[in-house]
Image 1 (cartoon, rainbow over the protein chains, first blue to last red):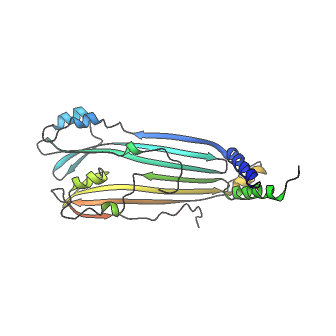
Image 2 (cartoon, one colour; image 1 turned 90 degrees about the vertical axis):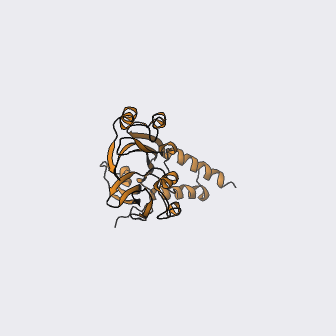
Image 3 (spheres, each protein chain N blue to C red; image 1 turned 30 degrees about the horizontal axis):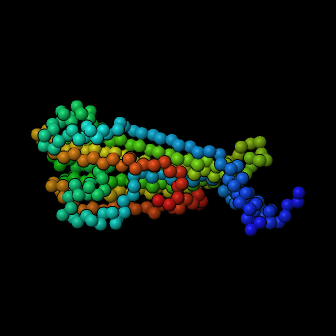
Length: 130
Length: 141
């Protein structure tokens, strides 16, 4: 038992000496997709012009299956780093929010697809495991 | 004060352990949450619609047109990087900041592609490729 007390002390002191610091960084691309603007878009009612006035010009304009698809996206990156003197751990996590507005040949919204993956994005520094 | 062997052992052990990890960097980079075969087990070709898939997996990263319908793609990436700088040892003795680096990057990229017909019903689905990323091994040779 007497052996473990100095050992624990040494480990704590070493850990304190080796801990140089932490770093948290964040980067975003694009503006937040506001839920109230998306909620204002009604299927079979809202026109293309109204979509543009609500959300602005799309980040990407696609022609799919005979329809126009407006894609809006936003990326969020969170970087956590544990900086030790001898070893550094870093983890970069990136997720995106994507909104697809499908517009039919008459210029009316056919479907709205939104998923916000960035809501659950956390700062992590431990690179192992999931 | 004279150091006993029992006090010295943990110090030596810690020093050896620290020397093993000299100048190490371990970095992981993930884009989106990887989708597994189990996650797509619910998809029945010819029955499941793209809307059903979106309800379970969220929106795809891209939707593109094809001759037979629509291709929806979910992309994800898992990159592992590790580096060891053995030159770090010389910092204590050399005025020159010398580096002797070995590093390795494993880029695990994958994508789930869904081929839908003109009625948005999934007709085929498959993973683009699955790379089993190495487990933070900096040895490049």
